[in-house]
Image: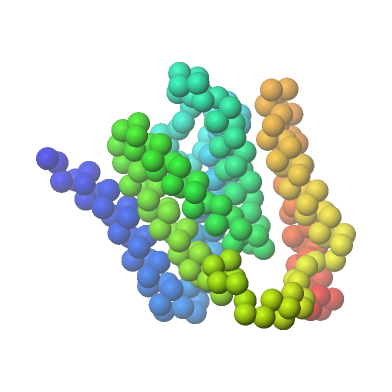
Amino acid sequence: MNPSPNLFYGLCIALPAVATAVALVVGGRLRRLYVVGCRLLLGALMLGGGLYKLSDNHLPGLMGPPMDHAFLAKNGLEIFGQFIGMAQLLIGLLLLSGRFALFGAVLLVPMWLNIIFLTWSQHWAGTPFLTTGFLVLTIGLLLHDYPRLKWLLYPPADPAALLAQRLATAPLPVELLWWLGAAVVIGGGLLYSISLRAMTSTMLLGAALLLGATVWHYYLRRQGWLR
């Protein structure tokens, strides 16, 4: 037995586990760097994976081997592939948004489990181990946000007090612009049947709207107009 692949596969899980443990225990700037880095990495992986599937493999993703349309057609899974692609696109947007990153991390857990068991059952060498490492990073994000996540696991003893808490929202125009941008991006992901150009152009427009909403919100905070 060649030990090199086994060593690599072990490191795919061990390194994320060590990084997660160190970042969560040490805290401070290291923990913030870990959280931002994980959100960017996992969000980019999901966004790329979703675009790859929705564009009939014309827009490359960051992680392989790909679940391409030839594989899907052979196994009668074309609709499943479209669903997974749209789900990955949505999860990627949530993670990269920052504001909705916890929701994205929660949705990402069943996504990784789906990929792990699919690739394991198809005997894809290495992919289940690499994906398990990404699952470890996702669990790290959930542990980081446990103070917010705990309400899903343990209902508050005083629900009225929790309901009385003020929600952290942006001004209505910024909120509407963010949701409009997200809807345009997701809707654009379904336009490949028309043309790849229509798909990419629409999604770029949505990304510009999202960026505009983000910059606008940041500007309002810098000016002290938001509390």
